Image (tube, rainbow, N blue to C red; front, side, top):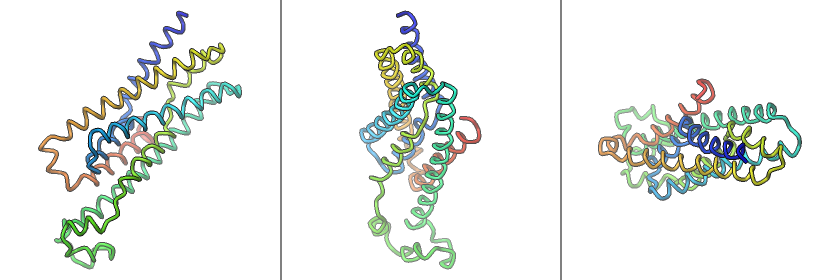
Length: 235
């Protein structure tokens, strides 16, 4: 029983620490909420479901691995490969969203200093349209963006969770497995929600609003840099 208590405390601590030290757990939600003009409630709900998907993926992997007799080292290798996959997903998504931001910026009338021949054909026809018409002409992808985030987080690994699940699972203590997964998940998701809340409120400052026309480009760049950091800099 003492071992289980220690394990539960460790699960809570690691859930908090690994989330706080991983910018991919909160930065995409913060920057996209400002770019897409999500309300705080919508932002927190999207963050919550992203966190649930994030935890569920590793829990399923850990329990399946134990049931099939896969060693901890092999499970950790699988988690590492998932980490690389998610990093590339963030890179592709961030780059795509940055390009989308540049196109949107130019379509909204901030490109008038450029010669017409330098503009893509898809943008030229919007050159003399009022901003409101341009906005109406562009299909809204807000519904798609949360699903992309959710998919990325489902594939996102929780390397520190796997070893925590192995001990109670090896003892056939299903209550221990459930308790560790639940407390780790609660700590992780709570930290995500709190961090996103602070970031959302912080980016609502008047000074930040002056950069509103660049927000899609900023959001894409932040996500791109986050993916690069995870893949190449060991974030």
